[in-house]
Image (tube, rainbow, N blue to C red; front, top):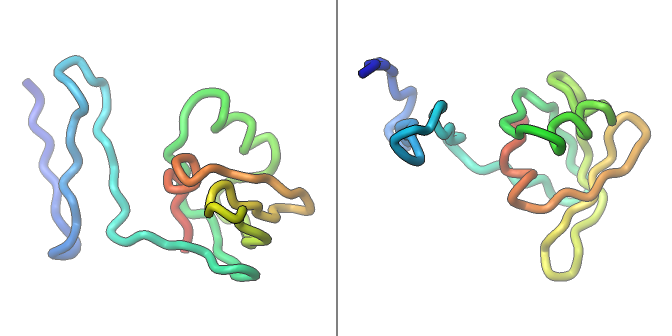
Length: 102
């Protein structure tokens, strides 16, 4: 069994964990949720998406250091439209929460 040491940077930080015994990775959690309000801009710091959705967003310019602006949220709150590098992409909350911004 492999042992991984880590340090909590704040009292509210959640320790990484495995989903199941054969899980190859650890689930990561942000210390705080960041929700962009209409017109607000943030910069992508990390993306914890995998597979086709990750590749598609990267193809559209969603990479570390890129500015993202919230354009519109659907009436029910999901999905939300974001402007990135001249394009507009609508993301569901379950995907957007896997993109860390600052």
